Image (tube, rainbow, N blue to C red; front, side, top):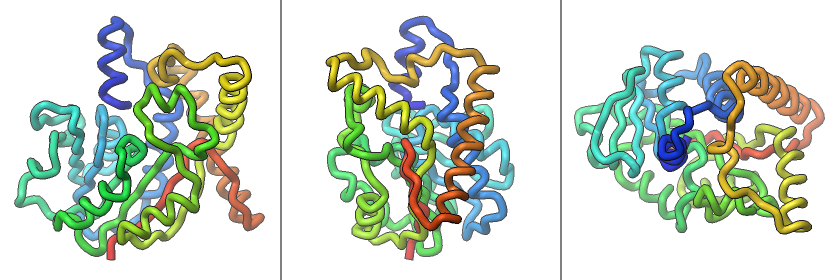
Length: 253
């Protein structure tokens, strides 16, 4: 979760309740990592927010050294799960091995120049050939609405746009795809309502989430099964099935 959303919840005196989308996303990332051989045990999460994803990896893979970078932090700190968080990449200890995995999960849509951000990461020298890169972004510019404005998004992407962007940044793209087909249908209806009736969100869906943990876990399980089925069905049929999130698996050459 973005730190601005955590702060908004705290300011309103509301408990932090994890959205099913976040729970499912962490599980899908862990699935992808299972059995994957990394060139280094260091995981670098750029734009790590409140470190939910990073801590999920730290708990499931104790052999990994998890590092997060987010400009919203005022000083380096350590989470209860053992992840280290830094305000800037330059503050990460120089004696750490270069990362074997770099994640940018719903990050590049927040910056005016996404290509320059990716090039800067490639050119700063710490991320070396052999590292894997995992990127997620909100899908389909046609669905850009008040929700995106509230979250500070500049744009949304389709799979072709994401592939071309990453290749321009000097990364080798191994696979692109989508997660969350069912939420995509819901989002389409929300955008239609917003444009036809002029009614939109006054706050983001994540901040507005009010369901308890039991409901959240059930919905996260449904999203997980749906994402696995749509992915398998798409591969079987040889077609791309869209979703609310677009992802890419890359490597550094």
